Image (tube, rainbow, N blue to C red; front, side):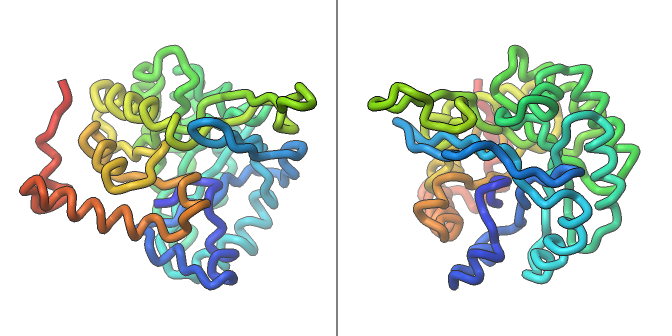
Length: 287
């Protein structure tokens, strides 16, 4: 899959890149109940080991999304995972009720981990009680599977994972970005308009791998690994750590059809180790 917020499949098609065809599932950009313009520019900067973004969840709002964006993306013919965000529990519940029953939606990804907004999201996902409550409310509001995207910026990730499981989550997505800061060497001011941003890319991979391992031991939910995946070996590491699937994020900015190469490399790596497929990794454990 693509990571939420890293792919506009319609724009890619317009540019002659059918990126969506390389993915098992398409994950939408996070949608919130009301439209958002996002954070002040600049919103993205490169740093050693990856990139920082302070996008701030710009989106057209739930009603416009359901009326215009969702049908257009659905027409591409790929199963969709719709990412939803909010600033209080009712925001998530509202989105779940509105999207329940929509054709082509395979799951809802609850973004309780975005570090680039001042309230909601990560403030919910940093507290086990809050996480359990919002997932439980969403579970009652929709029949769709609920994936919960967690943050590495928490004191006890295992406790948050167990809380999501108690609330009724069907899977966890691990992880969102790490909060970071970059300074302009000439102006001595922050490079991002939002001051801090979320760190993605190679530097995030060891953190995300550890998150998968921690949550694999903490709960019984399927896990989706995301963070610094840019090769078949990266994907294999996440699968060995306990993930059932992976998402590709910022690395695809440089290589739009990266998912194809990752799949091809993964097949080769498994064959080299005498493994018939990903299913053969199910018995692999880390001590």
